[in-house]
Length: 274
Image (cartoon, rainbow, N blue to C red; front, side):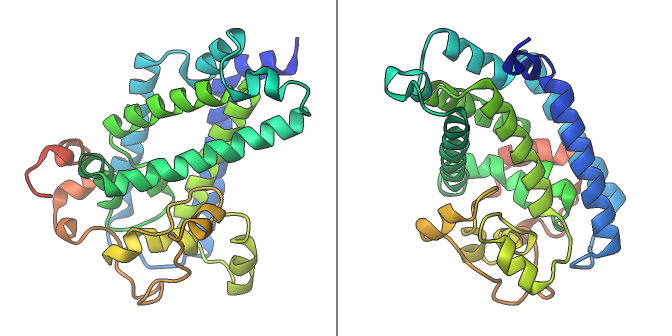
């Protein structure tokens, strides 16, 4: 059996294993070397944030049974997209995989940026930013409608790029892993952080994005690679108040119980308050 067929047949178990493995590592790291003292009950936040993970997984499997892998296979069978065209035939497999992942990551950067700049999309994305603390669970805290919209955008990108199945699975695993890593409440030595953020978004870099200060919230959009923020002028190295004193989340939801309750978060985008 070709490797691409094997990996597509086992896509679900590969993604679940990677998710649980990275989650376990980051939870242990947070307990051993936390960056900040959390303000809210971890139990209540985790119940809500991971509850959304379960709900979103069920919604995606119900609406899109074959998910992104099925779209990639369909595009490959019909020779759709850049990397299925005659123009790119003959390129080394490694170059196709790297090019697919880099271009996909660039598109996800702009998708995230639009989530902040388009009012209707921001209503959905506020669920992610309304978390009054930031830790590994925040990386998976998204409204189901945002997840559906994001999945449809991914489908379009996969078709346009003609991404190989292996590249799609690798990107999904990498995106989930880096999202948990850079949302984690972990402490990295300054010199190590400065080195790592040359090629990977670190927790200190992404934490700035969850600041209550608006111009900091509207910065550091990258999930995987820090280059796009530097290229497109949205990079901010450190928070104005420093990591220990900066305030996390959205000001209007700091005392709102709905910000840590799953039913309240599901209703949040439809409330009058902006």
